[in-house]
Length: 160
Image (cartoon, rainbow, N blue to C red; front, side):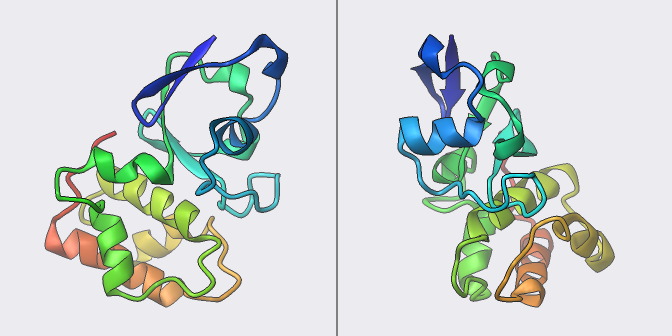
């Protein structure tokens, strides 16, 4: 089996059948941006895009990926034409969102997928969409401001 991660096709050895996409990404591909949080799909730390949809990679078996395109935090900027950072990543820096940073890749991946579906969300829509991602440091207001900034500036031109 072969899967596509960040535009590169990778062979998946038969011996890895049944492992989670998260484990494959971290342990076999070596991309450490996608984090293990709860292992139950509740915290959002492991969020990646599968065909542009924010998905908890701890809940997806590698066998179920098939021909779908996977984008991790490491490949997100390549989905935008705005420069070396995706507009959401740029807003994260400008709004000083990260504190410890552990949840941030999942937060950013969720926000990017959300803004590609809804480029002009209300503050309530932002809060609702981002509520599934947990942040132990409590940077929720800065997260909301960063998402709103991207929407306001109309920079979210990514469609992965």
